[in-house]
Image (tube, rainbow, N blue to C red; front, top):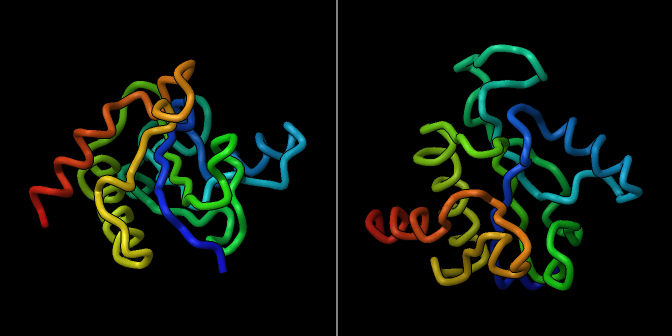
Length: 145
């Protein structure tokens, strides 16, 4: 079993999508399917479709946790990758419900703290992903501890 030392949060850099879309996009790049372990939907499943509350904040399973991810060069072997669907706008359900709940579950499962949660941009200065300040999410988790 892999030793997980960190959780890395990403965004899809798209206004819509599901784990199936990311799987397709990553396969087209020559990768072995979806590189993230989890994907959190935003209520817009297809390009041009309107928001559907029933599809917002769903946590979808991507790559199995026991399999090394493909989401941050040099940091895949000891991390869990979580992708939040969105570009610059994220829903309250994603940010204040699904993402914090998933992070709490992963922290508990792997005996991690908020200090072990990172945004992709912290490993690649050329990136802004997940396009929100990860410290805001970490503070939310600390308040609830």
